[in-house]
Image (tube, rainbow, N blue to C red; front, side, top):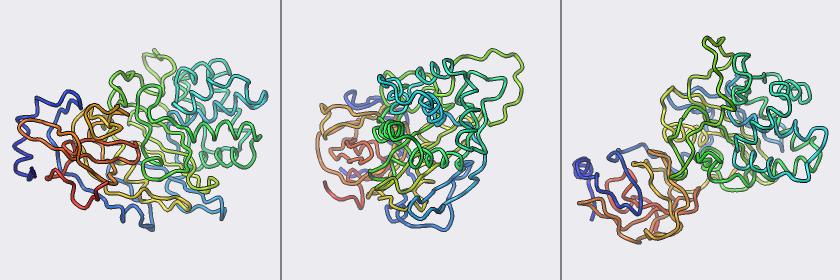
Length: 388
């Protein structure tokens, strides 16, 4: 049955009983702006940054040797897990690719913090950053603040320096090193080792081929990919117990969400987008803001995923391999995230008494389906979305 806006509002009182096989929603749906695929494909003259977001952006076209986007490109941000690129390169600088590189693979593909922390201690901590600054000619990169020497995620990094790192990898690094690092980034896992969803930014907006190293910091446990996700963030390698730490050289208060990597055949474009968002911003909201920003970028060689954007509601909402409640769970959506829908079809009926819905949306960035009942739209069947 179709559900109009008035009935959706009245629905709030009845959502306590939720289909256990699907999810555990915690709030009623709210209508959201839904930029169309045409919006995503449009080439705009300047980067569009959502309200409240501080961004540093650089997009470099390797085919023409020019930047197609630059915004605060030299501004320093705390790197979060993007610094793992430097940790990996430093580890292979003199000895090359180790015979057993499974730890490096885990750090680069799944953003494994334990591996990063181990290598940070093993290879000299802040000296790693100092060495790589000199080796790669980085101008905006600096070690973590003195009060936080073990917190590798507080390394200062800019969008422009991130482009320099990728240019080194693609154009100058020894072939075995390039192949390992870029090969791992092409195999970036859907979920990080700490359970956070890594499909934001580049991999949400663009079809393959792409390679990504993502970064996130300050979100606690929200935005989990799985029901058993860890509660650690990606920036702390050890607890710093300083009663009065010195002011940090980079912002360590706001939440950070970054997407970096390459897009297009032959790694045509290098993309680096760093964002800081107000303290307390939920992971799903930050994820949505970053996706909206990336959709405004001019990225040569990038194939934008077709579809329509919709808001979602609830927490623990499953993305499944098929349109049945018994289908394998691929991941959980970050609570309240905006998501791309390419098509829809009918399947098992899902109930949130007194309402039901048997339509399911296909989410191309996840390669699976979610029940339309958790999409912020007044009707069971999504408007303007074709049948799969």
